[in-house]
Amino acid sequence: MESFTVTTPIWRWQSATAPAAWFFVTITGDAADGIRIAAFSGQWLDGRKGFGSARVDVTIGATSWQTSVFPHRESGGWLLPVKAAVRKAEGLAEGDLVRVTVSL
Image 1 (tube, rainbow, N blue to C red):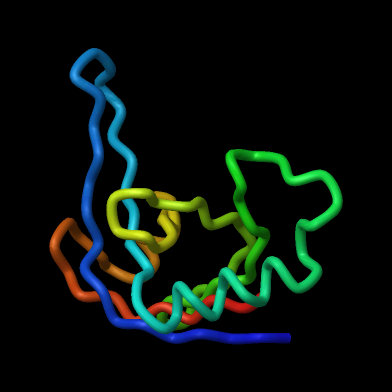
Image 2 (cartoon, rainbow, N blue to C red):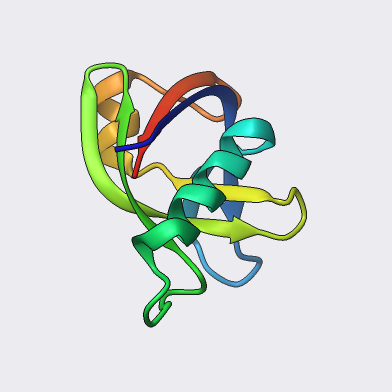
């Protein structure tokens, strides 16, 4: 299993028409390249679905969960959604630097 660890800020995205907000971290650089190589080397070569997403195991602090990362054209990296339960458990707010480990 390949693992990549980055420290990056958590940021909020909100639609102009919807009240709900989504929180993400952006994985770029060598970690993003490593995820791309690991994913292409077998994770989703047969029948890519979900906007080119890759299934991952994630750990932030003492919290671990399974989710997907999504390609992010603007940065050339990956977007990792951080759900409310994780933000609450780890005491995270918009703009906080987050140490994230992603495993494929």
